[in-house]
Amino acid sequence: MERSVDVATGESVAFSYELAGLGSRFIAVGIDIAIQVGVLAAGIAIFLGIAFVLGPRGNAPALEKVGQAIVAAIGTFALFLLFFGYFIIFEFAWAGRTPGKRAMGLRVVRDGGFPLDFTSAVVRNVVRILEFGIGFYALSAIATLVSPRNQRFGDMAAGTIVVRDARYERARAVSLADVRRASESDDDLVAAFTVAERDLVRRYFERRASLGIAARTSVAARIATTVRPKLTHPFTHLDDDDLLVHLATTALGNA
Image 1: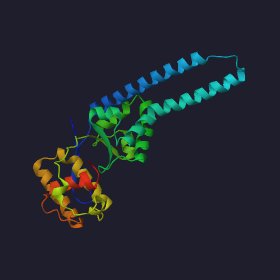
Image 2: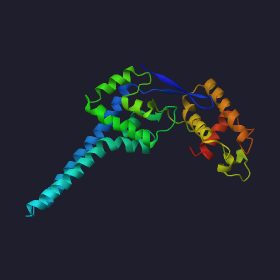
Image 3: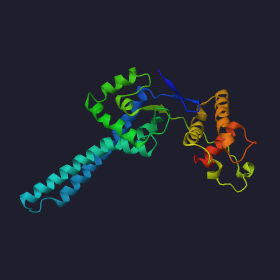
Image 4: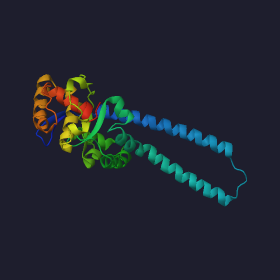
């Protein structure tokens, strides 16, 4: 059964996220593991090829042992980086997505709907090491099923949730000629916005495609009431939704 969670912002505007189910999450992990195994197989083949070409050349036994130790250390680090650094690097660089999650339309976000940061990515994936080692995610599957927010232990430790990543709707184009902002720059337009207000506008743009018309109108009106007084141009010719779309795609850089 699919679950959803409502996240309220500091401006008392709520966004609804559909939580990723256990099945889609494990398929995503399966895709990622398949990629990792493929990379590992390719790496082993390359390593064996290099070893065959170079081969022993009558080196001193002591020197060979040092070389073997260095290779073992490099191999151990490479395995760790491949199987656990993989998740950290991709989730941080791809805004909460790995190739598997991207294929399944999933994304990791922090509690409150905020984008995943590096610390959260590290914490949830360090815990993954224990989850993987104890019954190959068996306990994680149980935790995900019983958790109200479908969280595995890594999510609980990092304060993250995995949600279905609604396709970002490409907003209706608002031409600069219609905006008529004189010579003001986009940065000047939203200079008075707080960080929370900027993030609120961005999140509205990201989630608007999943909102019904009534909900979209209501949420847009509440956000616009907060941000309109801080704009350096009134934009009276744009309704609330058009205004927020324009701000997100120009001044706040989501285009």
